[in-house]
Length: 151
Image (tube, rainbow, N blue to C red; front, side, top):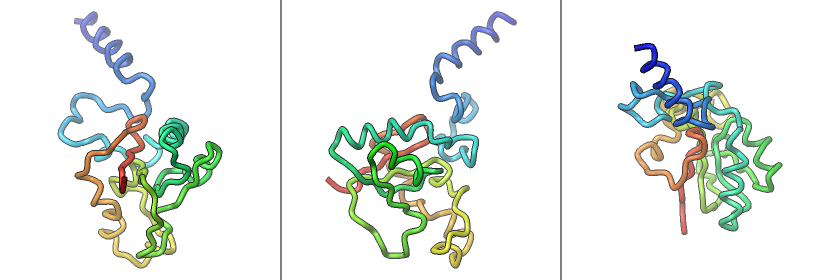
């Protein structure tokens, strides 16, 4: 029995490489991973470089996004970060893609920013609800979900 358990641990370690931080075991199958992930247990900015490379390979130099520390990391890779949380209501600069971190997608990191503080808790946690049922074009490290907004 010990051999089976150890073998399963090795299999899981290989299967999840290199995305250990947002790891979900087989018991978390009922929902997409963003449903369970929130706060510092997932978004550490490790996958921002991969996101930037993907965008730049498609000729994109800016993205509307809601990422933990994305405002400080994406610019280092030559991609302008347009913060979706702090945008005034109705402001929607045109970008081809939208990148949303798992913690924002599930609503756990939407706090009292000046543009959302007047909204009720339900409105803040569901700020990105319209993306929850959409299939992302790409997922980076099981923590950043990229959606195409336009061609």
